[in-house]
Length: 481
Ligand code: NAD
Image (cartoon, rainbow, N blue to C red; front, side, top):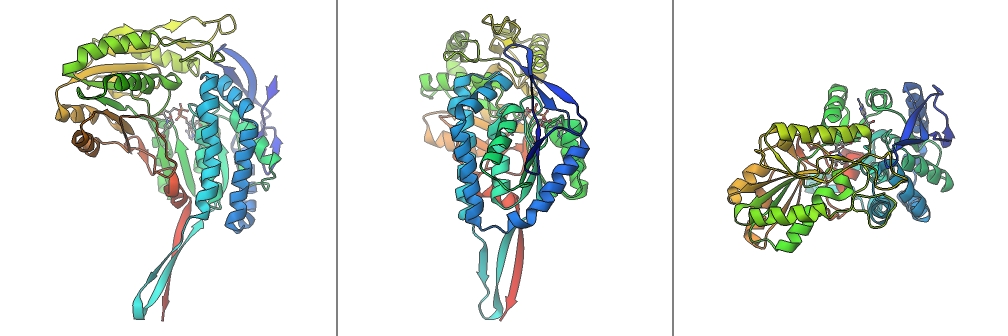
């Protein structure tokens, strides 16, 4: 069985412990490769390599760094099918989704930040007779990058590309649950001749590898995407060390459907927003709020559409909902269904583990897409992030009530608003507490925009020039004439 390796100082090497963790294919429930069980010694070696690579990398002409980003993007494109399969097997998501969305978006992250860094300006300010000043934005040093399992290569590359393009070197850790695409990325970096030590990928679990990165005194900035629980832990360690932090965390996003919405669009959109990637996207609209005038009809149509979603083998082209990423996550989803029942919720469809849909997937982790009604907005199921194919639905009275319900959780990542009333769309968007709002759409991405949440969903922003600002430090110089 394949043993993955760490990528340190330009080479693929075994972890110093010699130990490995199981990498499980969730669609079969079977171990299919081994992940390095690295520790602080591997992080230290990665840090030393990144530190040594920094002087040369940070002073390369910007175009040369951009060219490396383009080369990595081309490398991803060449191996798109292989990467999509790796992502599907690691994660349980439908293969077509990885091929169509995840891997092309990872490729585009490298392309975009290659281009963006060539457009990243330093500023100067004229002070008239007195003089002038200029602000240089310089790379900082070694970046620590930690990412989750739900969009493995896509989110990993969204940190790596801006960090490197801006001139930093990095010690990066993908999720131990989905390490394969990170491993293949290290092969691509070797193929394109990325200088040794510029990017180092250390595999392993969070408390050992992740925390060693967070605690390392030489790593001055940390970009993390994952749960609010782990984000809080990283802030507890990093803040007293005055590290620069970008934390992208959990969500409990509202999907608001006004009675004047284009009905069919909103219906299709609500199903997609709740169940794409098995509901395992931080931006999923898992709380569906429907104006009372259309609530009963919408509920019936929504449940009918959800029942028709094909839960299937992730390799099948017509599968809409694949496997849940791990047994632990599946058990968590099922536990929340039980909590919903105890809170008085009605399970309108789903709520149960399903047998694997084919012989090949007989031992896999599958859950029927679940819709729950009848819950109060303040109950646990409507307040806590579940991160699976489990959606709640509830009625609201008017705009004010919709906004109050949307804002009633500790999270504030995204919100979707369905309406044909222009003023209502703007008013609602202005009052919902979230970093990202979609009107009559969901999951549209523009790489130039700042991405992130408010409240317990995030601190800092990714994407666009915001990311390049995060990975650089401004230095201001005053010149007296
Ligand atoms: P997680 O927090 O369990 O793990 C994320 C990463 O942190 C993994 O690589 C893990 O190994 C590492 N880690 C765990 N403990 C650590 C520690 N003590 N110190 C340092 N690193 C540690 O999250 P997950 O289960 O992999 O992913 C699901 C979560 O990610 C959900 O909450 C989801 O909302 C969130 N998410 C957020 C965004 C966003 O942009 N806001 C995007 C995707 C996922």
